Image 1 (tube, one colour):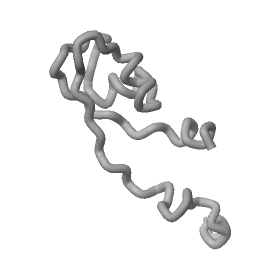
Image 2 (cartoon, one colour; image 1 turned 90 degrees about the vertical axis):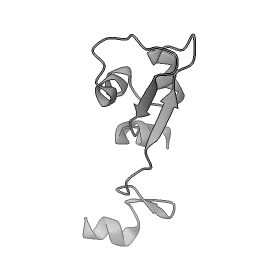
Image 3 (tube, helix red, strand yellow; image 1 turned 135 degrees about the horizontal axis):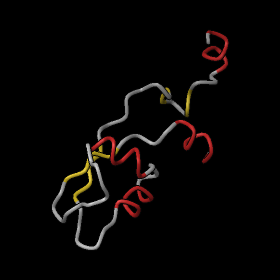
Image 4 (cartoon, one colour; image 1 turned 30 degrees about the vertical axis):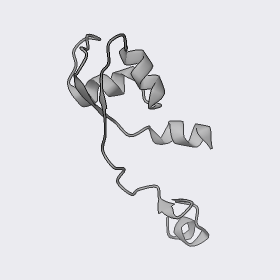
Length: 79
């Protein structure tokens, strides 16, 4: 770990990867689906459901969803 820090390997630009991301929320609009919302924020449907305590895929317009941070695997895959 020390060598990686010295080499700058754990940094994405000037922001360390372990820095806590700012919380994000999404207000559901008519016609939106969990799949569409998950794709928009680059998260999985199971992660979105778990973060919001959803047992099924039912969402309603006006509902506020907390958006989890994308996984490190997804972030590395995009790089």
